[in-house]
Length: 276
View 1 (cartoon, helix red, strand yellow):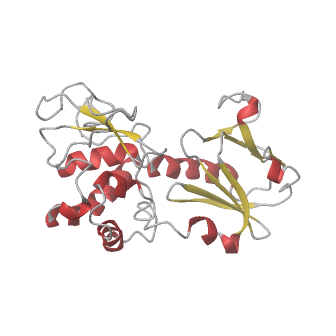
View 2: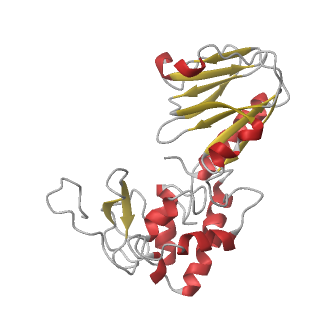
């Protein structure tokens, strides 16, 4: 699933391409909106909300999309070959006289009344890259279920909106705890640091083409994707295991030396990958 900074960049591309211009092409390629037509309407703006994208058009309508695991928005100039994937993966085309925005593999695509946007995003916690970011509320949300593993709590967009699996792993490393540590066991000083650090990481990366958390030349991330290579701090091999509720598990990376707390629980013969 994309991180909040990736969605922020997608929103900026769509806004720069479409905002203030009249749509000359509107092609919804999903059965529910097969007859929908937004041509002739001006695009007002595109804004991110956590991992959701809201494109507002004249007449009080909003196109709501979510990228989930592999969706994407691409913007093309006239005459440029479309390169986001095969044609059968296109879900929406929004075009003006000088730009065409193409949504590929969008698993969530809706047309809402702008006044009803909260139906789509009202459940989200404070947005790490939003104007209303509230670290105190975000921390309170995280601590509301003290027995929940930290990694799972960070991915729950109802707590704070914008953290994906990459930032989950990197935040836990920077805090020096494993993603399986119960949130309530996080030392008070690190708990207070958590939402601030999360916002700083996303803010620092929102304009970067390559995400970085280390500040080290040639090494972009501390642990994510690095198993079984040595930890950049201590040299211990980085490990990986699945974390989740069974239905939505994600590969989770950590250093067993630099990060204190429990290792992932054994899954026995369930077929789920255990740590290595």
